[in-house]
Amino acid sequence: MKPAPIPSRDRLIVALDLSSVEAAEALIERIGDSVTFYKIGYQLGYAGGLSLAAKLADRGKKLFIDFKLHDIGNTVSKGIESIAKLGATFATVHAYPQTMKAAVDARGPSLKILAVTVLTSYDEDDLHAAGYRLGISEMVEARALQAQALGVDGLVCSGEEVATVRGIVGPQMALVTPGIRPADSAVGDQKRVMTPGRAIASGADYLVVGRPVVDAVDPKAAAEMIVAEIVEAGG
Ligand code: C5P
Image (tube, rainbow, N blue to C red; front, top):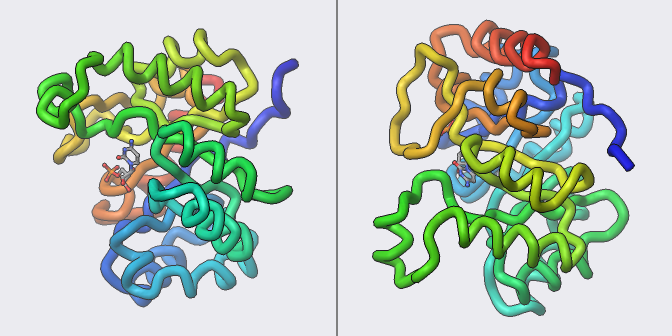
């Protein structure tokens, strides 16, 4: 069965990769109604950013807590319970079986767990340097299947992998794709990047976009252009 359609605007998740709550609030204010979904990661989260959770909820915005948890099961479960209490819609864990199981068991009725298969800043050399024998595509496939078997709600995967991963896990799991770069923007440290339109056409449900919006001269216009591209791609 196909999941319910996602409104185009909700498919864009803007990463609040900023160093202070004030800077994040100013950005959210500037962007206004053009973005409905925000992600808080290490940089803002460890700078007091979780205090924004209530404000985002008051404004009707959805929240993605991207701390990519990985620890012993009990610690992961307790962390996920706390994230669920913040009212978050998504939380990430690394795709290790114990970690994924602990997160799924503790998530409650409204939080969805996303597993990170392989970070999009990694290429094959980085994987081998970290001691893994599998290549990126084998690793992504193995982890995607484990995540699905454990009841994980969605996967974080690069634009290049979306079509393959969709083929592996079917329509139910949410596929969330970072490493998105509109055609004219800088790649930065990402190694596997894709334009918003191509990622949606390849089967991504949500796009995570940081610097192309956060560092834009006009972040609202940058976000609106991405949403327009999502609509154009049929998303
Ligand atoms: O600035 P940029 O668009 O590259 O930001 C991408 C965001 O997505 C960052 O917040 C990064 O932590 C996150 N992310 C990623 N790759 C993953 C998972 C999350 O780049 N596999």
